[in-house]
Length: 262
Image (cartoon, rainbow, N blue to C red; front, side):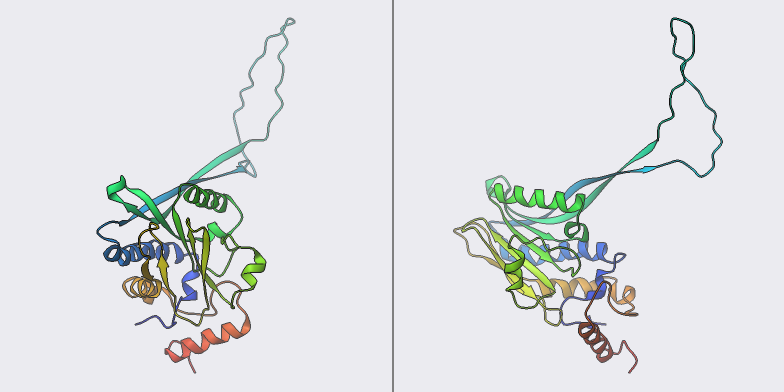
């Protein structure tokens, strides 16, 4: 079974499926890049880590406890009672997000270009977005190019241009942003749901030509060799908010693929 959609499959955005797809796509993008980068450069996968910390009350509805009240001596020998505090459990989780580094081995594995496939927490307010934007600034300040592949309809885009500049683009559902360190600029590939994913130019050092990356080819291989034909049952509309016209287009596409009753 082939993917029924010509480009991105919106059903992959389901929360229970996306993490598997994200990690697999990173692997296939890396394998597509390797032949066109050698011999000067290599594509390697790395992990970006950040910690999510929260607190929550841990008082049960009903509890039976044995108390121990510390005794405080005073000049009169009286025992002072300590006021009862509210108790919270601190919860910390380390989140791992893989990405691709294009490095130059002859220069001590110098980072030339980073490639990120965005995750939902990169686009929603919180620790994940803050960590991502901080790391993105570090890439720029360190002299590296950056490619951001955003295949999620939900959330706030991470591109550097303003909302007014984004509105000037042709209608789009997905974005690929290529930020060049020099000359300093951002190139945007605006992608509609109904179209194939783009072939993009990945920048390297100033004196070297860009290398091509066919995101659709990597996506197709990821979809074909992954578990998605069995996982994606295509029941109901795609996840998230979607205008009526686009929902109907998805229905028609699935019907043509034999995945919907006439």
